[in-house]
Amino acid sequence: MDIRYFDNAATTKVKKEVLEAMFPYFCEQYGNPSSMYSIGRNARKAVEEARRKVAELINCKPNEIYFTGCGSESDNTALKGIAYQNKNRGNHIITSKIEHPAILNTCETLAKNGFKITYLSVDQNGRINLEELRRAITDKTILISIMFANNEIGTIEPIKEISQIAKMHNIIFHTDAVQATGNIPIDVQKMGIDMLSLSGHKLNAPKGIGALYVKSGIEFQKFMDGGHQEKDKRAGTENVAGIVALGKACELARKNMKSHIEYLSKLRDYCISQVEEKIEDVKVNGSKENRLPGNCNFSFKNIEGETLLLKLDAKGICASSGSACSTGSLAPSHVLLAIGLTSEWAKGSLRITFSEDNTKEDVDYLVNNLVEIIKELRKNNA
Ligand code: PLP
Image (cartoon, rainbow, N blue to C red):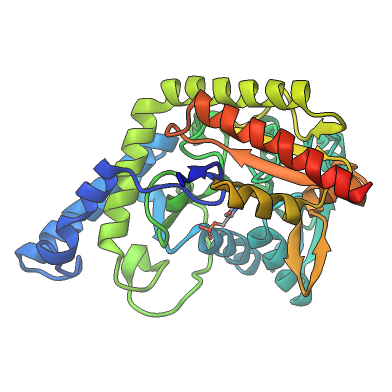
């Protein structure tokens, strides 16, 4: 059975060009970038070339990019690094209720260490309210961290407006752009972003490589002690092959951005219209206008998301549900609850996220199977 992969928000396939670019750094140019001899120098050159390509994708200077191990590490470094650096100035951080656990759980840890966290609510489309943000700011606020785009419902937040508010109050603005990078244009200068997290495996590079952009002049505490790599901010011998892969993936993403957006949004809109036309009692979650090009998120009434996923898997379909199976109970997604869904609707959710490998025929296969499976599950539940 062919596998039809619709879970590109979970992770993406490594592109052939990316794999080819990283290959020489395993067995040929395997030197340590800190070493003086030629294969060390070649590795250093490759790291710096990759840094330039990552910087180019988000329009910052190469020396504002720090390589990390993943998006979660970038988020941890940003939040803890700024919190501890500025604890004498203030102890208040503002974020949103729909962030990824890499932000929410980091905030929880900071809360246990004396920081106060405000979690902004979102509207039914998943967007924060700028008035609520303004009201939340106090003279102790040191950081605002709001995600660029949500990983479940694909909603894009009003980043420029948030950065303007942060700037007016002299507060650092960080954004978790793990889902947005490579999928939509990002210009940290035009958008006024101070810090940004991204992750390789969401844009066709391998797992285990991420980056954090930090605007020049912003001081932050390092996360880990050790060697002096990454301007003494991230100890550990560089993941040269991973870094080269991330650089290549960013280069490709920048080149293909226009066609990527056009192709994915067409598939997305076709999928949404087909599901709405062929299946009753369905909600489309997230914003219609401000949405990642490849994201669909549905809630089906009277359906358990986990059961639906198992049935789809039996047909070779890889997708995801908003509900997380923890300790045997199906907890509805915090994102879907935050946009106002009842737990009944939230439990019946399905996330479909496309890549350029998906075709219209894949969408037809998915929708036809969905129609059958949902009919069967509803009959059993009746
Ligand atoms: N932030 C968001 C919005 C994500 O979607 C993810 C991964 O799903 C992460 C952070 C964590 O990234 P990583 O898996 O690279 O640690």
